[in-house]
Amino acid sequence: MRYLLLLSVLLTFTSIAEESLVPLEVYANNPTISLMTMSPDGTRIAYSSIQNDRKILVIKDIATGNTLGGVVLDGINAQEAYFIDNFRIIMRAFEYKKVIGFRDRTNYSAAFIYDLNSKETRQILIPGHGIYTGQTNVGRIVGLSPDKKTAYMPAYYSEIGGTSRFGEGPVYTLMKVSLESKRKPRKLRIGTHDAIDFFIDENGEPLARERYNQKDAQHKVQSYIDGKWIEIFSENTPFIHHSFVGLTPDRKSLVMTMTGDNGRRQYFTMSLKDGTVSEPIFSRDDADVESVLKDIQRVVYGVKYSGFKSSYAFFDNKLTKTFAAIQNALPENNFTMIDHTPDWKNIIFKIEGGEQGGEYLTFANNGFSFLASSRPDVSAAIVNPVKEYTYNARDGMKIPTLLTYPKASLGKKQKASCCCYASWWT
Image (tube, rainbow, N blue to C red):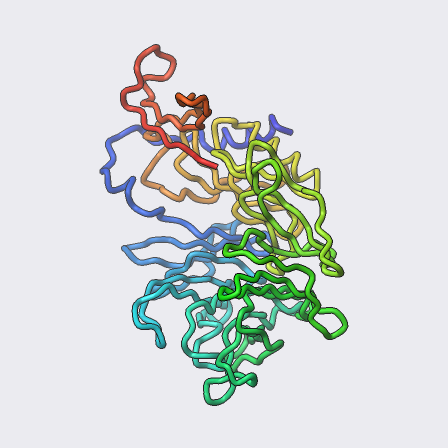
């Protein structure tokens, strides 16, 4: 299979523009195309495109290349985007702005939904509309209802008069938010003043909540069992060391990452029944678990390891082998998984390194197809090769580095005076 993969990629990039001088600002500009995502049926893509100095969300049919819709993202600094079905896209935006209740400008996040049928875009959860006014993070979604009509979103909530039923001001609460109308959200489960996260099942029922009290430096996890919140984890710490990031597929355990005995970030599970912590499930001595891979419902299916090149491990060994074969087919390049269909029959990769400046490809039926270039003004002809190198420091520490060589210097015994390097510390 690896030879088929290699052939498909090589055929994709047989057409290369002639080398020419490119203005410096082309390299300094943000990518022209970003936020690439794929519909659940694998027939459509959506991405952010810069056109005439305006940022636009574009939806296209993959087979025909036809544009199906789009919206100008003026005032929406979208940093994340994903399909929730074949017609609706959720975008999470971040902005540094003035917010009611805060003296200075602050970081603000919100979620927006775009409907391909109605061609309308609206903010899903709005401070002051059914939730407390003075808050800055209203863009988190911790789950969707099975019919995709409702989003479950945590936010600070207060009763009439600005206080909660506890009489102590707003509390962090799990809200039930309509994705089809502008009606006010409803509180699903009242939270606590020190709650920082919620975990729910496929029907929106609570499974667990995470709390951190800065005053007491107390980090807790409570499981919802038989209608009661039962503490299954507690640690007194000025800094949070255990990151609870998702759920196992059977939803019987929380997924947790923390630094293990080998000094690396590792993947563990914690039982929702009694807080029992597993042995490390994903762990490497040469890399940290950089992030976990999860779906819209926060169910984890694998991990991404740290390093110059993206490497992955999945519960499905077939997927792990497929990803390794893809990377081995072109060892000089880095393949980053961007999105995939729920059945894994279609996967979007971004290929960088070697002599590629950032191309989006779809992988299906053991072959690649070109989607778009993130930097169309930077052709392969003007991308200098990048090589990995290990630098031995005076104290014996081996420091991984990247070296960029002028093309003319490759294969020649000469000093790479034009090279630059970047160290990566773990």
